[in-house]
Image (cartoon, rainbow, N blue to C red; front, top):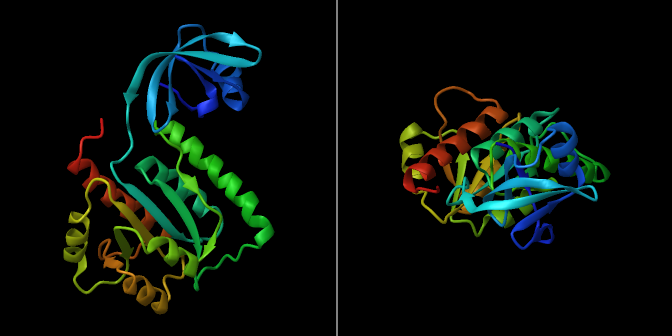
Length: 249
């Protein structure tokens, strides 16, 4: 079943008025017909709707069942991703949105290969946000995670300091035992930060700064993972634990 997102101004009583690219997608790409059903996500939940018809370049959707499903995790996962090269961040955004992150913050770290000019950051952020929305639609998310423009490591620490738990995949002499202990701390309602290093890894000073803020180093196994693999693996661990601890349906 297809999923679309709507804002407050799109709702009119028990109907949604869908315009813009989604209208075009419904009518000209999917070629939907009257009474076809689809999901409209609004306000953090998804409503089951049926197509009433088209009017003035809008699609009219009648709500069939309010709060039809909620696919969101019962906690917020904020991914602080060391800025990678090429299109790796697009892959990371797509996959971690599918897994349930609430926001993604690209971070300029010491060992980042890529250094984005300020004038390019906005255009990159616009593309990244579009990828997040597409992934949210595909995975039937009830919200579109926010993808920020790249920020400095110092700014990232400032944003992370008030989180309930900060996890950092890094060398840890206690291995998976430390990971199991940290993951067991996850519970509903938490705000959880995950710091992932870039291709060049963390600078030791960055690890010291994160742990000084209460960050817990964890292991993702005995193998060396690429930055994009580490992001997916770490978010997957958190998603599993949160899904096991709370029924979000």
